[in-house]
Image (cartoon, rainbow, N blue to C red; front, side, top):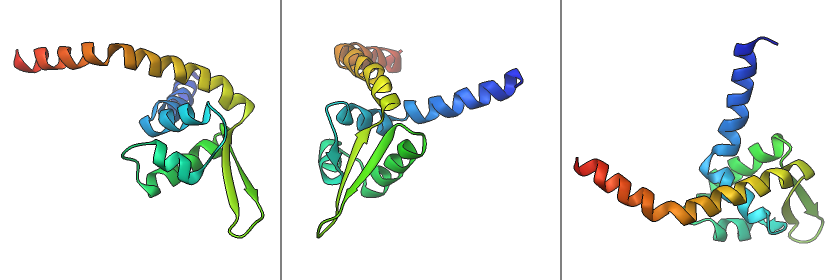
Length: 115
């Protein structure tokens, strides 16, 4: 595999795991499996369509698994795969960093925009 192809594949993975909705879904699932409605309530501002697309992409990438329990109506739960759990640890660190530094970033943006 040449370097440009490897970079392209790496960028593709980073696009998925660095997407804001993916990060938030991974953070919620890091605490355990959830139903679709729980995920939707837990992520402020995400549309039904975007949550569905994000979950499908994470499932396709092998980070999230979907479990359907036959009932009426069917119960659908989403949880992390073993590889998804390893990513969840990193996502949690990123979220902690963002929480600790959000005021600094906000102040820096204001200072920059005023200059």
